[in-house]
Length: 564
Image (cartoon, rainbow, N blue to C red):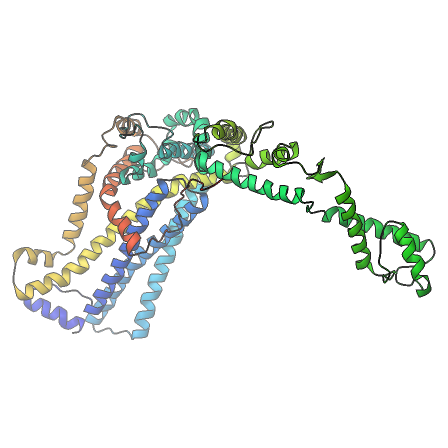
């Protein structure tokens, strides 16, 4: 049935039908449904990202996927409008060839997608590149604060405690993750919270370092690996099988140069020694300590080097000491004595980032819950790591500006604070828009089919105004989410945040955002409530239909080492 006859029939029986041919309507419906599944799955993974410790590269990955989905969303809208436009041209008896119409539609979709991609990129990059030095520094501190909340090292006063006495369950819930997605940008951009971030910076940094390394167990693994590397060196040392290629090479070059000088004193070169002098040259070289073979010729550098290597190896085996990493130590020490050598301990301290003078043991008991290991190694390591990294957090603001020492770290921190809320907002906008479009695409043919068989007043209303229902449904959900509450939104901490942000300016660049703190917190409220209902479904779609696709973010898990 052609588009024209569908509309004519619709006018005759008073039933509204899709302007698109059925196959095009179902094609757009299928593509829209596929996009929605991907968008909702991405939404769940985005919350996983903000609810855990992530790297700058993972934030970049999620940003790229988010921009791609936003570009696809815009292109799908244009696809539907372009197909409808083509159908309206046919209604006016203006027919385009199949090749022309397909090419025009594809060009419009590709252009729209590309423009949307770059537009979203421009929004993000402009905010990041023009962010103030203070915002960048505060973003670093805010993310450390956020990580301490996630890991349970710190609690946010006023937020209800879990049954375990912490807040880990709260922050691992969908509503908690949605709240955390917005927290860094709120804390970083409002002056009132800067003192809080600065005051807890040292402890939060310590907690962050420990969490990134996997806590005591993660550091224990690092010690096991360092000890294993030392043991491999010990086996080679004890069996007189150390790599002495360096000393051998130096002695080979030295002996060859000495040999060439002795020939030059007699007006000879290695390549023009008369055969009748071969025996005397061999004897002369042997007296210099190079035991060449009877068949060796004066120009044979390879045979000469083999003889030198043999001599050096014999001398090495005859020694009672050995040079290990540039330090002379006795041969054949047992494992414990070798492990306690200063040169070995120094190397371990460098690998494990420990203060000077720290004793690293060759064994630590596991039956005490690694308490001794934590006391003697892990705690000093964290002290040293904080001592090394804290000055960057407390550096002058100028170091975070363009050309400053901390410019790159500041930009990464600003991006990590800005991307999650922007990606979450764009993701929700795309999902809601295409959910409304999907319902519209389904309602028109469905109600038309029903009305051809039976006339119902409610169905007639839906058929005549198919866009009203999805828009009303989504609007009602948004209003409902704004008035519903959960344990976070009714907490004293949230109310304090709400009072503090009422009328407050959000300052990322030198120019405050048009969206004030109170309005942004209202978005946080609706998103936090909505995610508590939608996240389980979104996660199910990602794990089943998309087979666990991670959108560039891999969950970090640490496990206890199986053996020493």
